[in-house]
Structure formats: C-alpha cells, structure tokens
Image (tube, rainbow, N blue to C red):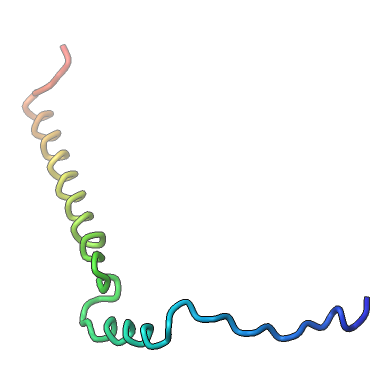
Length: 78
C-alpha cells in the first residue's frame, strides 16, 4: 500500500442541523424556565407526572378492592 492511500484529507465540517440563532434561542428559553430538567418540555409534565400518578392510583384502587372482596368473601367460586 502506498502512503498516499493511507493518508486521508481532513473532512469538511458538516452543516448544522439547526441554525445557531435558533439553538441559542432554545437554550435561553430552557435555561430561563425554573423547573427540574425532566419537566422542561411542553408535554413532559404529562409523561413524567400525570401518567405515573394515574397508574399508581388505579393500582391502589384495584389492590384495595381485591383486599375488600377477599375479606368479605365476595366473588368466590363455588
């Protein structure tokens, strides 16, 4: 192999996905919001708070109903 095939020229930098001004604007917005990092997006409070609370509440209800039914003998098979 020749040394010219081993040497590679430096690649040109990729164009950015977003314009720098828009990126700086987004950074300024997210750094100004005084909430925990995992709640800073538009719908993050729904996915991080509401859904787990709903699952916990429904599971507590079902466990409580099951305990009540067992303690009162409701729903037993003959």
